[in-house]
Image 1 (cartoon, helix red, strand yellow):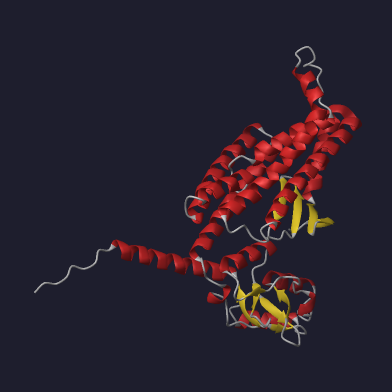
Image 2 (cartoon, one colour):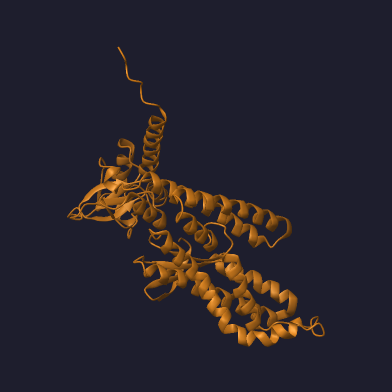
Length: 377
């Protein structure tokens, strides 16, 4: 995820923090400072940091549960609206997705159980009417209550949050995966709309931001599920671009411009002397570099490195998930020997969905047309 920086590597998983997270700390720090001066600001920032440490543990719950099914988690990123564990793929079976989805909230349940003996005396004092007005929960009690809120919030059936994924997995045990996702996504978007409207009218403003994230997240998940449904069983080789042009590592941006103008390609794989892929030149990066450094700049200085190559035998939906994770408009496709044999692009995805949907619609229409009556003569 862009604008994130690495802070640690735990259990083989990179932990990152998005720069906007510090805006959240600053916001709450100023808010607490206005209420009680520097002591309140310090305690408030510590509380937020501890709550997000619990969020991090929550995400590790998802990641370690996914590892049980052979699913790797490259990184976990902390954002102002929570944490995101970037799984390399979703579990194939609804029962596995149920375990992965519920593992996160269960971590918060364990934290609540650990903190309860320490928080109970303060909670009991707060319930006593004689001290209710002067009751000020301590840091431990606030952390205890914060984890309860995390449990309740995450279990709201608003896809793609944990509650929505739990709902989807339960529905998928009884119906088609795409239909289950569609129902969960619709519920998630409806709840996001209500939550966003409440956040705008009554606050807090961050509720509207979370609602926006949930709304578009549900939309994206529904589209991915539809794509997975229509591409079921298909491989990357079935729809990859096989007529393409690659640029040598020692080429300049001038050569790339010529290729853009004389071909239908937007993005180009960059290969070394042995024909192995060493990077990808993205058109947007090309335009920016032309303005800054000129056409004589080597493509090796502008190309994106570290992008994965997908094998031509990979399932289509799996490759699409990888393309979304790395946020790139193209992925090189290689054969069993590691040779560059094609390109995987969003156009592949759109064209495949259109064609497969048309085929499915044609087959459905054919089933509805009664067979011709036999001729009698």
